[in-house]
Image 1 (cartoon, rainbow, N blue to C red):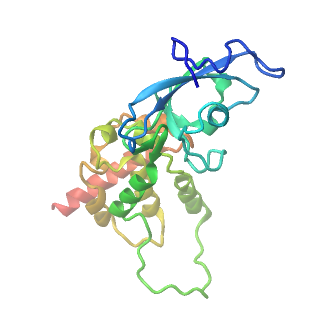
Image 2: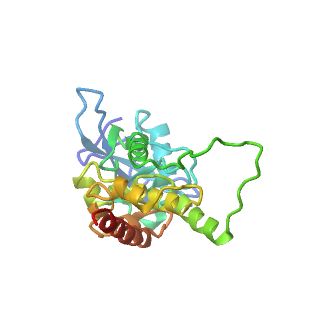
Length: 264
């Protein structure tokens, strides 16, 4: 694929449109770099693409990979904003490619990988490795205190409590909150909103017998809740609109109280 002097591939003539298009040509400036290739250099490359009705960035990236750049790396699974795989920086702001309509943006769009996470290549990052490490460190599961009886009837739960837990369970671990967090960018061990939200979720679960003192041992320091600077970038960029500000403020008060009790 050749490029003109402006860095725009000449394979697609500017201004060419098919019937049924929106009349706009998009120019996607995409970060390209393969850390596994010693000859690869970090750079932005521009790809023109005719916009179609209802086009999302996910659709645009697939068309570019199919028609112009087969080696382009980016992640996707569900295309419905559920898996969280397609998180990336969209004009500098963390978001999901599959939930971002190109019609809502200017014709020139810049895409880059999410910061903080290990780069796999181009727009693809290893959020799974980061999430697993965070989950193991914060012990985000219900501890087994008795042997499970698979024949027993499930314990009932008040609908209001179940709704509160479900609200926090809506997190899709896309990594947008981490990429939008000033503390996470500066401090690699910070649990971030995604980790603290998980703690808030299990703290509500009646099957979890841990006390606030136990949770304080996990998140009662600068790696946890007291590392949060309350800038609330996490809530601003969360694609599921989770109430992170409320949860973090509540968790901070509870952990402060637990810390005071622990220190006498």
